[in-house]
Image 1 (tube, rainbow, N blue to C red):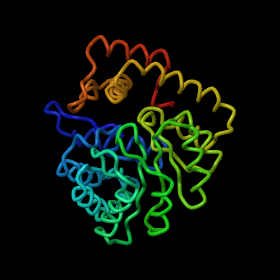
Image 2: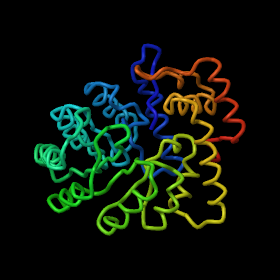
Image 3: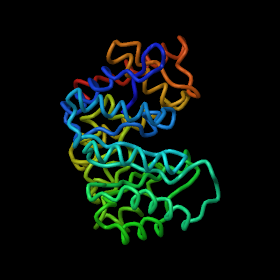
Length: 292
């Protein structure tokens, strides 16, 4: 999910819950908050806890929510994960600790152990998050296999946002028997769907939930090749922009709500010329959340 903001750049809890409900009503199995698309690391622990609490209080079922609890500081990841588990969420999405580079597999495994052992709750369900081009730290097959072996009832899946088909296929071939593999790069959804993937954690699903669903759950449907080509062309059209501000620009256009344009620093909101360009993209691709 994209994270809507108020004029003061605080989280807009009303819009946040309304967007979650709209996505679930459109057929999404659930929503993921504070991932990369949701600008997660730009928000404090207190903001993230309050947002989850308010979303649930607003009527979004906790069991339909996945929470990215990833922080650079391990104690904060642990605290957010404990809070999410206590709230009854479906699961938590966790990056390996980021910022420090050259981290060994042993160090990454140790960090996940500290969180899992620190939570010490049978309700914890964890999804491992691989996005090395952003985090600077990736998850090797050794890390994944070790954690799955040590915590078979905790580690449920992998979110692969490396945006490389061969890497995603390699994960599916190695782990799909025991784990769900979700991909964030929408053109790869049909390939993973054919290999047993049961869904997606997708930025485009903010305004194309039905298309994303078909790509992964009905990979051989007659409409899928054209829909995949449309998604590829859309992503290429967004290449000149910073991705999160562009996605928020699309949301602003398709909802008629300019508040969606707001982003947290270090991201920069679209300028008027860019807003006009994004409006043209929406018209060109006939984007419509009520249909897509």
